[in-house]
Amino acid sequence: MSNLTRASRELFRRMPDETYSSLEALVSHCQRQREQSEDHWISPAGLWTRPMGSDSLLLTGGEDKVFTMNDWSFGQLCRLAGVTKETVNRLSPDTASRVFAETLPRGNKPLQIFGVGDQARSIHGASYTRLHNAELLDIVLDCADGFEPPPKGFNGGTGLYCGEQDMFCFLIDPTGWTDIGGESFAPGFFLWNSEVGRRSLGVETFWFQAICQNHIVWDAIEVVEFSRKHTANVHEALAEVRRIIQSLALKRDQRRDAFANAIQRAMDTKMGEDADEVRAALSKAGISRALGRQAIELAQQQGRFTVFNMVDALTRLSRQIVNAGDRTEVDQQAGSLLALAV
Image (cartoon, rainbow, N blue to C red; front, side, top):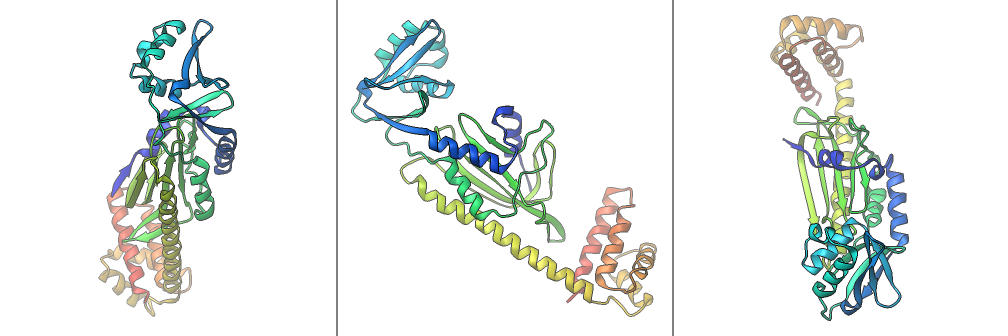
């Protein structure tokens, strides 16, 4: 088992305006972003900066395109020119503009400016291939029926985030609990992407036992991770993301059906014809005489000594045990009784 901290890191770095209350709200935002954003292909020879007032720069792309820049696109411009953002920020806009005039590359390959209205969201070379957040969320809507955000984090974080630089989505199925190796697990997954080159796209699926208010996923098993850089074949990754999420949902359904069938068999299978037979079966399973006697008394109230009634009785009794180790041992012994329902 492992503890997954990816969602916890997102919880602590996200601002309130990057947090979405529901999957529907996140999807709607990302769809609007896709509709309002546009790629502009610019010749390097036409890419310049010019001062705007006393504290900022404008980015010009040819004769008719002028953009403001956010922190991310300004940082990309600095990297493209080979100058540090910290140094440029110490210069006046007029001096900074002259620095860029001398340092920006002037090759033949076009540059792509990704913008919303008159703001440049990102600046990339020709090899960068964009994949929109909305394209990934379309897969979630198609394949992740029953999955929803986790309980809110201690600071109100929902696990659903999208800002200027990237998107992150954390979903679980709170009704998907099932028995795996005698312990209870539920399915969940992380999905992430950046439309502006901040990070790769990726998905991570898992089965977990608990999620704390820091959004740490505890005791995760069957962890599957896939990621892809935004290169020419990045859209081929959509099929793999779809396959991974579909596989998780399918396994959830199979396990839930198998668990439901096991419970039904346990409800139909007698553990013994009378208290003496049941007491002997409980002793063989390692359950103490005193605990067995209490469980039999509780099961008698249900009218039948079925495997299910005995497991239910032992589970209720375990909640009264103070020591966590002893409580866990009784829960495991109770769970092992389900094997008697064949």
